[in-house]
Length: 76
Image (tube, rainbow, N blue to C red; front, side, top):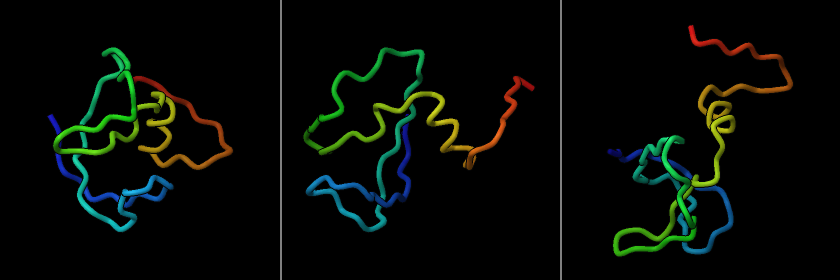
């Protein structure tokens, strides 16, 4: 369901370490309902990141497209 991945957090949430460290990455399909509230906290975690991304934002970040440019996307 998920895996640990080294990430470096760069935003301003108090209590989140800024140095590179392992975070647990879970892939959640856009076909499922939206995650209700990004400000979760549980017994084993304090934050859930990336719950507000759109499919287009994730595509751009994952393919490392730099703009401005024209992009043609096809199924092949």
